[in-house]
Image (cartoon, rainbow, N blue to C red):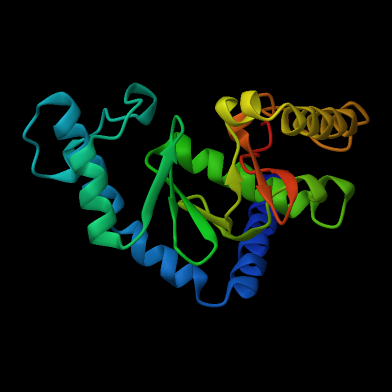
Length: 212
């Protein structure tokens, strides 16, 4: 292992430790929920594929990108088992409300772990800079999960119904992109309205893994 890689690994561990110190018991709470992820993958896979897989470890070809909708029965099972509310999912991560003003993003595969890791890196890198004003505050993060304050997610329907909100979002997006053009950040996935939300009356980015 090169010295550069070693130093990077040490820096990453230090960043995780700092997040853990700020979170109090939040890391423990989220970790307790993460143990349900293998069973979530198994049930979701079986429901969509019509398979009867008993061992969660056998579900090796399950990718959220291939499953645009969570089956109703699987969602009900998850919410009853964990006491959290399913909010949605992207290509590789599931997002749930923890019921205390925060959300958790759980990775379901190695791609999701990479997205979580890059989101943690972005939060750590831009803390204390003008870019942080555009980001939903992160409370705790690892490659398995990210916990951040919950914002009211935006959508095309909301923007179409509220032209003033659509204009405000465009201005925030333009301002963040302007910082990117100045070399202030490397976050580029800002075009989709669902990547933004409203928190404390401010439009913030709720999905911000930094580009590799």
